[in-house]
Image (cartoon, rainbow, N blue to C red; front, side):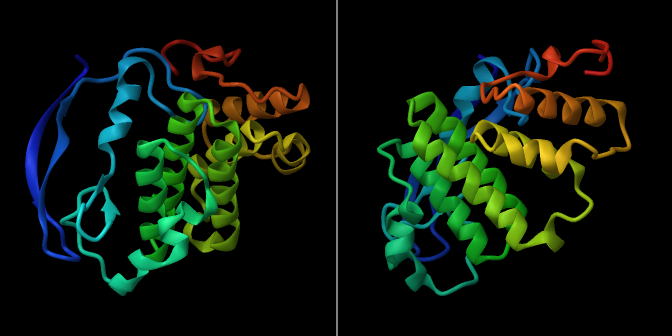
Length: 220
């Protein structure tokens, strides 16, 4: 196994209820190239179900439920939270990750929220729910555009945005916004070029970094 898990008890920082949850205690370095949006390769993909836990008492979702929540606990009773922001899914992993994203937004942790929406999209991809996966990706894009200061100068998120737009079928936007973008590294420049190339071909499929032409194995 590329990772190890164990059961541990956690006390919810919101309601004080103690419950048992599975956590990852060790993980090996992933083998194989990640996707363009940095989703890990191979068996590491199955770790997603352990990335967010939910309190069975109040419904608080976070990376671990003992993490402090500084906003009003009434947030967990809102329709927005209970319905995952109107993103419909029966996938329990995706639902927890979406709720975790909403928690991060409430706490103004916008980068963490984008990562959580993206992870939810991966789970929904696996579940075959293309519509909800697109909702997650486009919600993450909107979040980046609504809070530009949180992402300014972060080229990793810029490239993730390009992939989320392309995977959502927003091909014209990818070409328009990224065709003349420059990066400080060869790999980032190559990824950007490849995203624009795929968008120009109206390709919204999953692609890995090792598909990028002109990049040596050592640079990948």
